[in-house]
Image 1 (cartoon, rainbow, N blue to C red):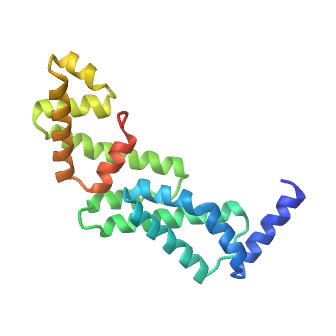
Image 2: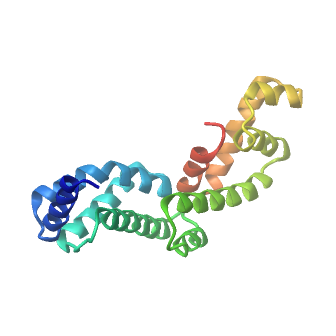
Length: 195
């Protein structure tokens, strides 16, 4: 790290600790979009994700911390956003309490590991529900979204029409949406091979 960047980091963190508006604004602009995307991946709702991140920054403004490094600040922002998003899921009317508890227990680890944990939990729940779908419907949903096959490939393998594949996929997603929370469905579509 150069002497100049080291000095800028020191000034930034000192400014934040003393609730300096200029430095706070700089941090807000630097991290807001990425934190919104992170929160959205956890809860699956952009509007609520923005509210969550704004609350995190509001708490930071009301009670500034003395961070030792920018990395320390970044870790704090991601952990605070993650915890707030998981608390939101816990309180959501259609959320599965067990899922939120499972995620909440994974306190440490970096962002990549966190997303892997979320992905595994989402697919575990989805696999169970796909198995409960009508046989042909479940088979088509699995081939499309989990195995990543195109509609044409599925139609050829199962010897059915392309329109039947599309209809069964639509029906399958409709049934899954009735049985699962919007957050789980959104994450499933985000993580699946087929978009």
